[in-house]
Length: 157
Image (cartoon, rainbow, N blue to C red; front, side):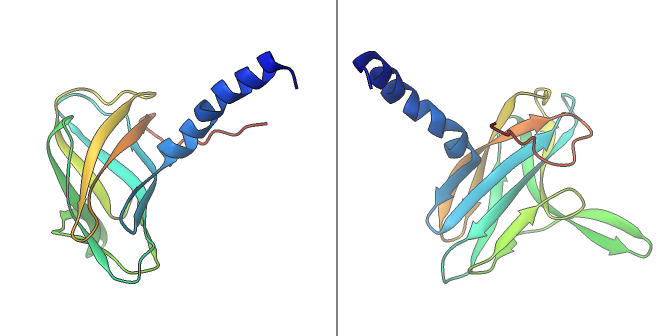
């Protein structure tokens, strides 16, 4: 391999790792993957979705979340009220050891209330998650279109 080709390869190698690093963050035994949200207007509400894996042998709990993009950020879930599913704030989200809890539409999720800027598709929004044992970890929610059902996946060919 020639020196210029090797030099380009060495310079490009760290860039190839960026999508992997962006897809998973870790704090202690807690790993976060696929953080995303849907587009939403300024002043309204947005929701955050992600997968949280507890790779440890001891339970942990997500106890709070915050974002500079919203006045307040709450932990929410959906509960059945007769024939209707309703969103409700919850004080914590339990993370059993050795399991993955997925925050998703129609289930547990982050609620960003009082957005101080629009969430626009193609952008990201920072969110800090605070865990009882693992501490704080910052993630970037990748903003998808308003009707998205999940994070956009990149496929390399």
